[in-house]
Image 1: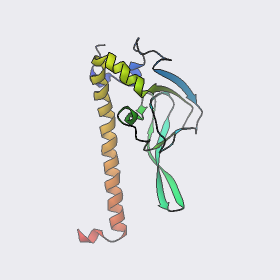
Image 2 (image 1 turned 135 degrees about the horizontal axis):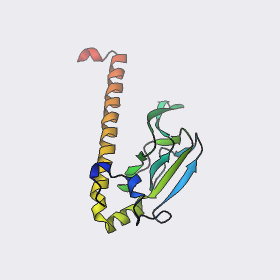
Image 3 (image 1 turned 180 degrees about the vertical axis):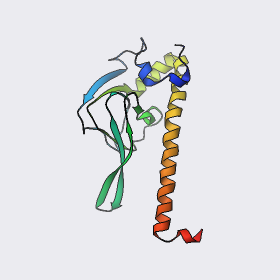
Image 4 (image 1 turned 60 degrees about the horizontal axis):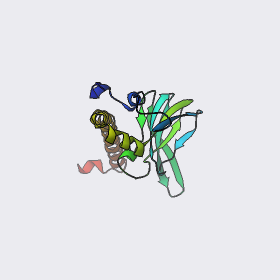
Amino acid sequence: MSESPATYSLKSLLEHPDFVEGEYWYKQDYDANTIVFLEGDKGKNIYVILNGSVSVCTRVELSENQQMLSGLCELFDGDEFAHSCFFDDEPHSATVKTVSPCQLAIIDAIKLKQFLDSNPELGYPLLTHWIGIILPRIRQGNKRLSSLFSWGLKAHDIDSLF
């Protein structure tokens, strides 16, 4: 394929003639307000939103007996999520829930690795694409953490020490 790394994505990989639906991936429809997976669940799939939108949220413990879900972001058509299972076996770090009716492409991460091993010319553009997705998410998370830390210091009058 002669696509540039900037335009290469999992959604475009779904159209590759050798990346066969039913062998490497499948489509699944979800109603609105349906949990795709929960924070803490083990995952082995990467997801592409074919249509619809999802909300990504995480649990915040307010006390021993009280929790709430905090929204991290909303994702839309063409967006990808749950990339980390490609790299490690850690559980999901967030819950994903549909906002609207959705159709998702669900890609088996192990089979994707095998496909990329057989088609190494596709691996670099895809990893470059993923870095372009993941780095802004990490930066946004760092900004949120810094903002919350600052708020906590001010709320406890600790900010006067600096």
